[in-house]
Length: 323
Image (cartoon, rainbow, N blue to C red; front, side, top):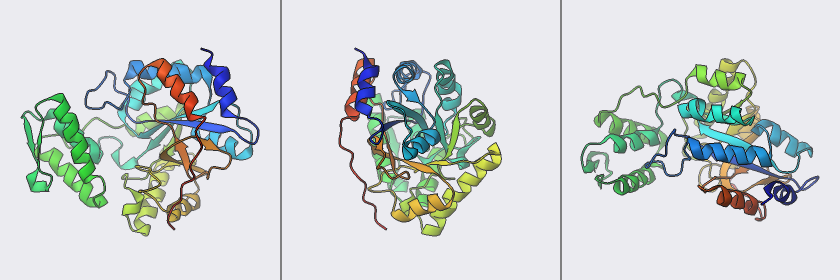
């Protein structure tokens, strides 16, 4: 099937363009049974091949700027990554370069060079446990089966859901203590280093901000939320010696994770656009600080292509945020 003309037709042009923003997190070298939502290198390769052949691929900053100015080409897309995982540099970056596809990497700065995010503390604890049960009673999280892969996947999901909306500091501390009590190193090699981030920028990739410690902004007092936004941006600008104009909200669900005040903070900090994790495509009427994204769940090329096309036909919901 000729996907390119279909995508160009569906994406609109002139005053009614539609921008697709793909969101990724980790790209493991091989399929990871405990990370079923993350494409492996082989899958990511054909995804980028398809995207680069059928779309005009731009960084998030360029694409959102052109969306605002009315100069966005038909069938435009962005490839974005959240958090700052090391495999973004070691696995994803060579594939992006292979196809000449620029991408935007949203970095949570506190984890660079040896950190581990709260959710990864849980995932890696379950991955490395040597028993058939994980006892987290002392953390108020119960006891969980870990004897089979299916049980481990369900256990990860259950614990993450239980911790996700706890107060930010409590969530961080609890997850770190669980990892430490399970014998995990305090200095994992899971996230990019400062040198990795510089390499991406020097290689034509865009670096965007993702706060400092990856809190759900709605869970913080306003002054702490603003500090997270401003501090993460300042660290990246000092590292790269260039402006950082793109932002992605941690967690990023407009219904549960942010308010209008956070949009104002982001604009005040000097960002030009911000990405949510709401499913959808952006249009000329989309608030530049509420750009939706597209999660590439499908693991076969034709289904992936079909989902890309269908997403362009869906009506776009307008988020309604509390003040």
